[in-house]
Amino acid sequence: MPDQFKGHFAVHRTLTLVILAILPAVMTHAATAADRTGGAVAWSGRVAVTSDYVYRGVSLRDEKPSPLVQVRATLGAFYADVLLIGTELGDDALGRSIGDIEADATFGFNTSFRNVDFDFGAKYTGYPNGRDLVVGTLAEAERDFIEPFARATVNLGEGYSLGAFLAWTPDFYYETGNVTTLEGQAAIPLPALGPVHSRLTSTVGRAWSENANVVSPGNGYLYYNLGIEGQIDRFIFDLRYWNTDVDKVDGYEQRFVLAVGMMFN
Image (cartoon, rainbow, N blue to C red; front, side):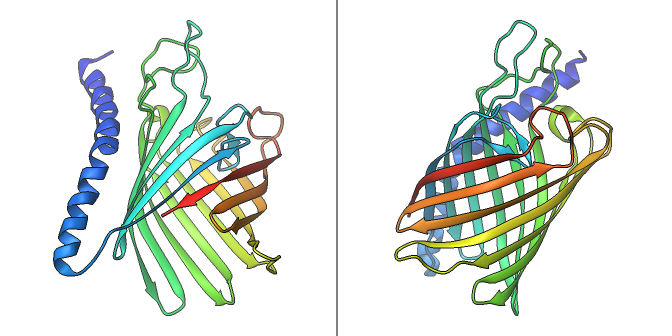
């Protein structure tokens, strides 16, 4: 492999670790600056377990339970978010796991116009304890990727909303070229049951890949979900049905996924 590509792999791995390492320091500095200007950094997060890690309709945990930890810091309209979650993305040619932790670092800002909320940002996905190897081989290929995104949510009143989400990944997992994702989203509030507050949410999305057999067989696929997410004080839960239009391929089949956890702030 050419030396310049090996250097490229090393840079991306280092960048993943650096982002995770410096985020607390960056947000602490932001908090100090905010205090001088009268602002304040707000912290929140969640610790949870999900029965499967499903990413846009596809199981990334081999249909096994996965722990997750998420921390978010906000300063005015800006936010930084880190998510650590267990994955199962395969073994190399010697039967060794290529890594079982995904780390997502998201940075963005929110703004509103009338009854429409906007969210603009970018997400960096990395694998801090993994190796950049193609599954079943010893060939190197970059796995980390960056995804700019934009979201618009129309608030219809009384908790009802409709939204659209657009993401563009200029160089997807394994350096496989451009991937574009478009989603439609909806939320309907459900009647409160004592201390239980919940809503019915749904997403219908489609992913297109520049090259064949990247996100699915062919150049893209349709995915959708429908579920109930709710909260009882700090306890949170999500029960969701997932499916895709990809037939007879492991990981793309229909499934119910249950996630439970605790929120903190």
